[in-house]
Length: 313
Image 1 (cartoon, helix red, strand yellow):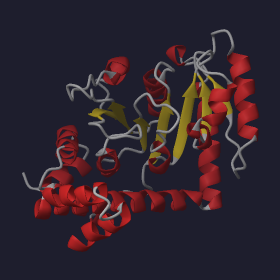
Image 2 (cartoon, rainbow, N blue to C red):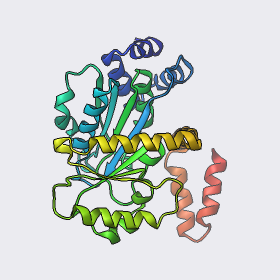
Image 3 (tube, rainbow, N blue to C red):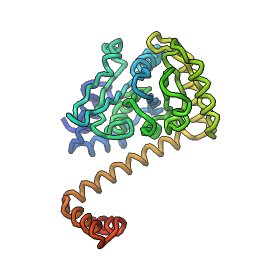
Image 4 (cartoon, helix red, strand yellow):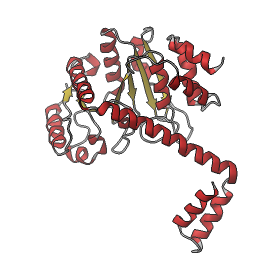
């Protein structure tokens, strides 16, 4: 089936067509260019999907919180897409793709599309294919798209450049205030959620978060919501916080700026990948080995060698 027909079926909401398109994206199919062109230049649904990212350390309840939000948005009658990114093993290259296990309640719901994706060694908490898979779900009519990152640490903040709103999840007893203060992830959160709020130390975690947030100068002061996702508690407060941030984005013009930045980063990533591929095709590793030998011998320096490499392209 050609790309145009496949995209046409996806726009009609056919789940198999959506799944096939995402698979072609993940596998960097030769048809990817035609698919992307059709998705971008063809008829678009307005307004575009609201993109919400969920990130945080392993074990804080990202999958359970995602399932809770899916349930809440479906209760509002919205069509929901979920992209759940799992880490790939650096040894075998495999990925468990187990996030769907916690979302079995939505498995038979035609208004929910859930796709697990392996990170395939891509850093930042996302997969290489996530931005374009996002475009596929948007074309398929999803009104809300939830992106669940892999369990991240203090530097994996790619989700902030992809989502309209980023939810950072924490749990009581999983790191102290010093850890939070030095975490780059603290600066990208639009809404903070302290999950598993039935545990001891919840209020202490909220206080530490509030103190840390006060140190960061931002036009938007991120709210802190406590939840018990396994029981669905706190979801109403979380929806209110998400709606408030959406209102702020639209009113301040930041929503358009974020989406423009998203497109800019996607273009840059594609261009860099193309340059690497072109270099490998033209010169292989031999040219790079020659330049590296010159740097080691003291005949050149890395900047000069890099200039030579670029001029060869």
